[in-house]
Amino acid sequence: MVRVIRCSRRAQLVLAAAGVVAVALLPLTFAYLQLGSHPDVDASEDSASPVRDGVRVLERAVHEAGSDATGRPWRERGAVADGVRETLDPRFRTLDGSRVAEGIAYEVRVNDSAAATWAAERCPSGPDRQFGDCEAIDGTVVQERAGETTVLAVAVDLTVTTREGVSAVTVVVPVVG
Image (cartoon, rainbow, N blue to C red; front, side, top):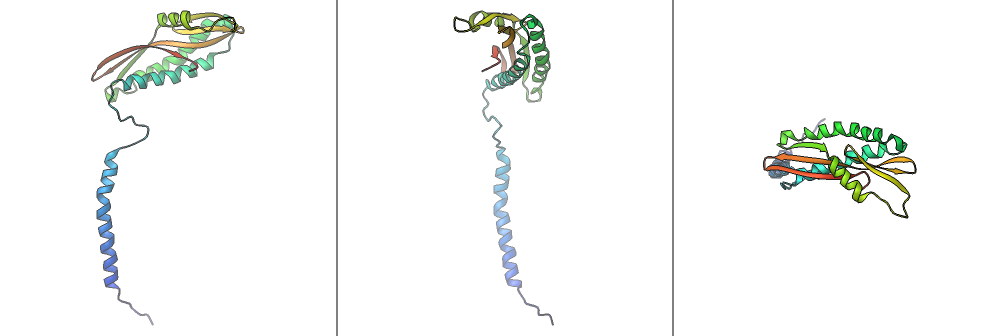
């Protein structure tokens, strides 16, 4: 024999409490969704931010391209510089079109004169360092070390166009920071 227990009042109370909790959580859910907070998102509207972001992209690209090219014989330094440029050119093009939808346009060009100036002023030398010649080739600074070509830096002009205006900087990005 099956016995039917009447719990309609308790069931109604539980159902009503669940409804109250759901209604109370609804505004919290909407508030959370509207925050749009994410740790990778830069919340500042600083106009220098796109320039800083572009320089960071260049730093990563130059480090990788320069590290991969280091170690070939010094007599092949021109080919090393060409290899660095070949590796960087697609990355420059990617950066050029990366944030157009956001109203930010980048333009990257190598700067031969900045590379030559950097090489003349900052190439490591001295009695405690047994390094050889230092040259700037097509914006890439290379130095002879133990008969091998070491890529030290790449000089670029970075132009960033935003809704607020145009920012132009010349950056010499070292391969090793």
